[in-house]
Every structure is written in structure tokens, then in C-alpha cells.
Amino acid sequence: MTTDLMHNLERKILISAKRSTVFRYFTDSKRFADWWGEGSTIEGRQGGSMRIRFPNGILVSGKILEIEPPKRIVFSYGFDSGKPIPPEGSRVTIILEERSDGTQVTLRHEFSDATMRDEFIQGWRYQLALFANVASRDQHSDVQNKVDAYFELWNTKNPDLRSQKMDALLEAGMTFQDKYSCTCGLEDLNGHFSAIHHFMPGLTISRNGEVQECQGVVLARWIVQKADGTEASKGTNMFLLSPEGRIRRVIGFWE
Image (tube, rainbow, N blue to C red; front, top):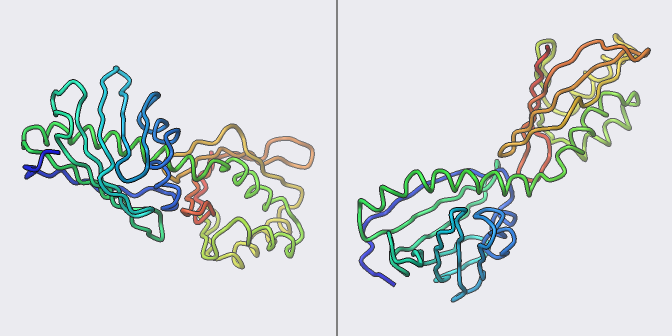
């Protein structure tokens, strides 16, 4: 392992997932390959090997120098070809910290050459974005079902039954905003639902197409129908999810 590593590249990102979910990408080769690409592997133990196969066929390898699940991992990083970094020629440290809105990932890549360090800035910017999306999709793999369950709250007439469903799906301080309403907390939202059934009876809402998810933010189109099945209105909701997968904020846009 090269010891003259005086030039550091550091980046921080926030991933919308629990720390235990994020750290599995350093102990599970399948998940590691989901991030880096087919053929990539990792042995998540002290002294274990790490191998990255890029889509263009270039190979990177290294060894796990330190590991402290689920907080920290350190591994050497070098190209099998010897260029631009020789085997064992650089070192990567990744630290995971729990936060209320997800997992903060701090990456530090140490190099012996400043020019080479600068060449990796965009590469890590790209790879960490891929990582954030892969881990977020893993954490929120059931997001479409949760969106459907949220819309079903609007269609549930019994406030007590609706409250039980809300407790299982939404954060206690969840907020909802659109051009006609602004609520804060579950009790306020439940009252809003009751008012809809009182003043606009017979309307139902449902998802209208597939959901899109990016790093804990979800877009879902919706349609409101009258009792006879005709369209009353439609639009799109933006959902913000907690690291555990609960809905913490919804913003509605009408078409």
C-alpha cells in the first residue's frame, strides 16, 4: 500500500435510507454490483478483496483495510492495469452517519498526486449519485404500494379507521399542501379528509400511472373521479419520504 498519500478528495452526500441499508452495499456483493456494475464484488471483512468492473471493461481492485459496521469502511483502490493508479496506489475511506433525514455519507479518497486527485472529482460525483439512487430504491422498494395506500386514505370515510391507517403510513408531523389546502400533523389532515367527504361527497382519488422515485422524492400522478366514473380533476403529487419509508410531506399540483 502506497504511504505517500498527501492529496485528498472529499465529498458528502445524503442518502434517503437507513444506515443499515446503506452499509449493506459494502458487505453484499450483489448490492455492490447493483451500484458499480455486473462483475463487481466485495468481501466485507478485514482483509477481504474489493473488485470493480466498469461497463467499459476496466478493472479496479483493492483490499478492505478497516471495517466498522455500520459506520465506516476503508479500502485500497488501484487499477489492475497499473494506470492511472497502480494496485494499492490510493485509499478510500467511507463514513456513514445517521441523521433524521437519512444517512450522511462522507467519502475521502487519498492520492499521491494532486493532478490525479482532480481527475476523480467528477467520477465520484457521478458514482455517489448512482449510489444514492440505488440505496434509496432499495430502502423504498414498496413505494408504489405506499402511494396507493395514501390515496386510499382520501377514499376512507370512517375517521377512526382512517386514523389507524394514517398512523402506519405517515410521520406524526406530516404536512400536506396544494392550492386549496395546507395541513400540519395527522389530526389536521384527518379533519381535512372528513371535510372533503362532507362538502364533496362521492369523489374518489387513485394513482394514474407508474410512480417515479429519486433519492427519497416520489412523483405520482393522480385522478379524481365522480360517482358515475367521469373525471373530476387530475394532477401530480410530490411525496417526501423518511429514511424508514414513512411519508413525511406531500405537495399536490393540479392540472
